Image (cartoon, rainbow, N blue to C red; front, side):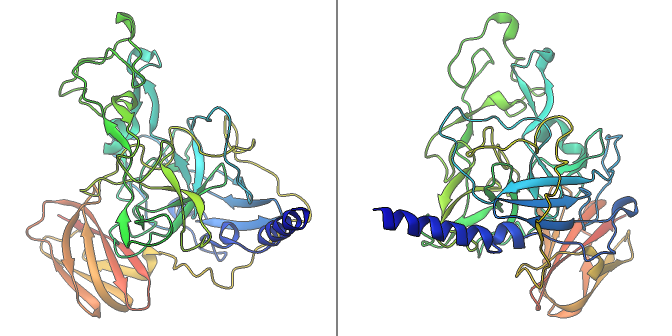
Length: 406
């Protein structure tokens, strides 16, 4: 027994000191790329020790962002340094709620937020507003927006960070929660052992079958003063977090919006969160993580003024020779003219095998399979507005470029 225990400890130490996916999966700025406001984009550096990984970033992604209808805020450099544990542990005590502000970090250094918008009905903290319902109109094409402090973030699937339409393979590892567990895109293996093909990871939260907001999801009966508004066109089901309830087994994921499973980066299996979409590929509550974490959350990343950890002396600097994950850069493709009244020409620096055109809600509206480096899309049947073209290239890259219909 003692020999087996020492063998396990030795294996754990080897795994922790090696450059695992928690070290190698980040999109690192090579040093001179800037984005919104001329601010450096993506992750600026990755340092690691045997225990932790330190991610520094501005919180500005490498893809184009904005505009944000009705949102007066502007993205600003957050000068973050997040600390991610390399040995995440399940929380065996009282689950820790995902709070307002950042609850994790996408692999491009941008913040993950939970499903809340920070406000509640009559300011009572009983019926808490769903960010997608109340703020979704201010999301940009990448489904993100800036907070009052300038912190650009995503409450829901970051559609410009990974290909959320690819249902043929396991989704990319796209971030880490602050309990140290990975976050994946919307698709995973049907079975936890990696078999059964690829399926969309469904949330196990369902809209409640209620006709009035007089009870909470746990069955608690509320006094009249704390009851929510009538369910109507102004406040439909889904407008508040408490309109949802967890129904075990109704989806692939648990109450934290994750599960233990084999993944491409963790062939021995790991607990992982998944972005959740409905059958129309629209964001599905609780969207990413929550309402509670699965694991133990270390201090330093959450709460007011957090996310400014200090890289310890002796930490190793990760220098990517190639992460094995293609980076997505809007600068490698172009569109002309923008806006267009009829057709738009897309040009890429590689052979384009397939094009998906998405509207502002991330819905597929047009497809093309050109098999060349220039693509002409006919927009005449589409309504005026801004669109996002996803160009899948023969070299494995997925390029994104903004298109507009006048």
